[in-house]
Length: 138
Figure 1 (cartoon, rainbow, N blue to C red):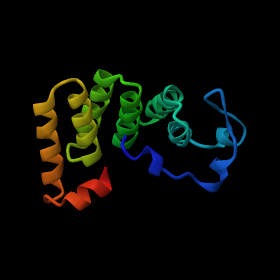
Figure 2 (cartoon, rainbow, N blue to C red):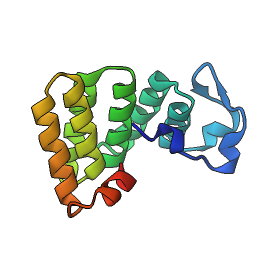
Figure 3 (cartoon, one colour):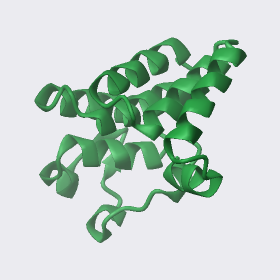
Figure 4 (cartoon, rainbow, N blue to C red):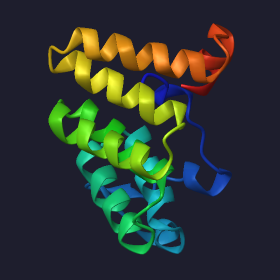
């Protein structure tokens, strides 16, 4: 969530292919997750959620897509739903540092600071306590 501005896109996606939050033209050839990532970069979070949901219909236990959708929900300030997706990602991959971080962000935003801090500590310990590695991942 914190690194949305750092996302990059393949050269073909740099074309103006988004109209009203929908992928059209050249974007139709891409998988829904790619469209979701593009919409996220454009800060069209509801469209990103739509595409991530479509991608999850094909692969419902994909922790990366669940994390991405969690982040989009977070950006829309839908913290309970963001937490639900982070938990779903962790059910698939309990050691997923990004999922742990997404969960911590959602918990903090829900006013559960102590629980959030515990999650961040878990994430940090999962990378051997190396803050640089942790920051590079999230």
